[in-house]
Image 1 (cartoon, rainbow, N blue to C red):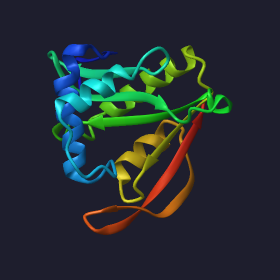
Image 2: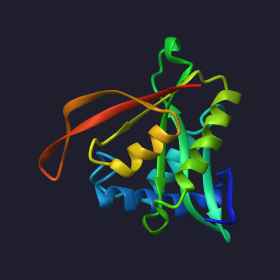
Image 3: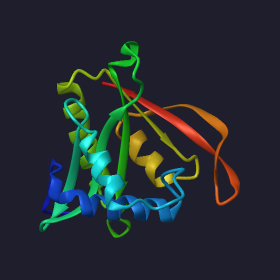
Length: 164
């Protein structure tokens, strides 16, 4: 996709980020969350991303089409160099290279903010997401069997990592 701008998220992006995240919840391909979120939830989530924990968006013609965030992996000091990653792309924009652009940009920010590793968790059946992560140099660490339930059915969760 041409004309994609990757930039740090701003407060005025919260509504679009909420819409994209809720779409990911409804699609059941990217998160164990089952209930869509409201604006209050997303405002609090956005406010919790301070200092090293960045949020970026991919926009085209002023419209956010996806976002990526660096999230705390653990509160323990020993894990200070590890960030948890979230990437969500609007359904109509998936498979068009936006995820790769977001990953490249968020990895650069992670390095600038002294992260040594990024970890992420994905569903083994999310082949589009895994393809993106592998293409960007992430490796599979392992699979947690029956890690959570979606719509009453246990699902596995795959852990992936990238050393920066």
